[in-house]
Image 1: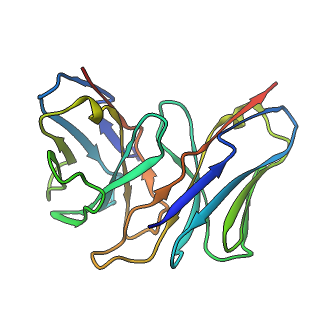
Image 2 (image 1 turned 45 degrees about the horizontal axis):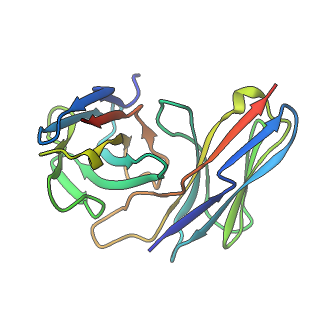
Image 3 (image 1 turned 90 degrees about the horizontal axis):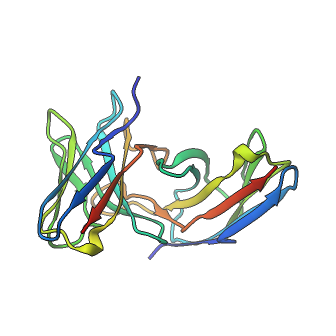
Length: 114
Length: 114
């Protein structure tokens, strides 16, 4: 069974204070690892997809990296508007019936204080 | 181009009643996924549908839950004889094809069973 563990559960940073969020995963036959952002009362918003170890993706102040066992979401010089819950998810191998859904972690609740 | 539309946004049902949650995918999207988010839990995959077909329902509870995506109209998640444990946020996501996780999510329906 696919498993995704995110840490820390919550993180409070000062504006401009860089940090990293961790996502550890167990999946046989990874098809992709995904990062989403979720604001209160909203659905997840897609950020990145990573497919193989060593891959990196960047978007504004965010950078996602992937190894064979974990992924990191690095936040550089964050701003208050970066406050949200960040979700990590994996897509495992195809089942007999077709494309499966994502397996999500519980998320990291990030607060950036001005 | 409207995003994924879910309604109602909030739904209150008494124990034993039926709940119907609707999801209109983005224009041009023919694949729909339903997820459930329980308090303090991560998003859990429930079911994956294409028009008139259930492709993967491995995450659906065996009783009281059903889903459909008719040729015309929105996808419907139906919960019969609701219990307090069904209280959760239910999210729908859509994609134009087998997107491999880069799905667009709606804002969810928050079901409260009293």
